Image (cartoon, rainbow, N blue to C red; front, side, top):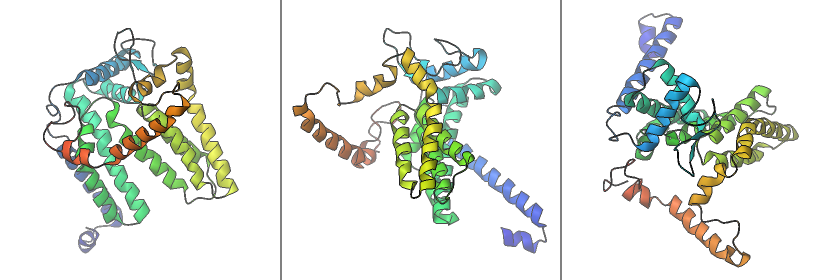
Length: 310
């Protein structure tokens, strides 16, 4: 493209502008193909999607969800005796969208697909920065866009579409500081902010983000870097204050999902720790196995067509 423009005698500033416009047009065209038919696929609009979209609509108009105060840390999902709570990030982002666009299934589904689409592109950008080769980034981004497991999650309005984006944002932030000896407050705020996005984006983020924060110690190869890691921990801890206050007023809510799905129990006798460890190994190997992904796919029928493979 550059050679063609040079032969045509196009000035450098115009060349740069044309390249940007062509890239933007290509991304828009690719996104239109990525979201083709998303209002009917998957069919219907399941309960979790409706709850997310409805709460986002209410926040966009009143600042409050279906239940509870204005601008809550967590959103109560259903009016039942033992309610579940939804994570705030997806709802607030969708509420911003509903401030400017009329609420509808296509808008909500396109919103969800956008964040998965952005995650795939950012993953390609990360690959480019690590490898130093643009073609590697294009291959990685293209592979991510064509990965069925990411594509299917990106069609769902509830917050399952956000973890990929928030994790890639953290990886980009962490990679941006790994080659620097001294980290500025801007660098620290960027990494701590990305950890906060992981935390508030999805249920698993409340376990992943602290582990990622602890993993930053691998970058602490000097005393200055160690001080930088401690500063990141402090800044990240500040972002957890609303969550800690919420947990204080709603005891057990943040860990409810964990205790519902885990096989780990705090009251297990010491003699049963061996069997629990064996169960952990079994589940870990099962999670790492490609067989379910390649042969069966997601077990939830709203997410995946049963019998169509992985």
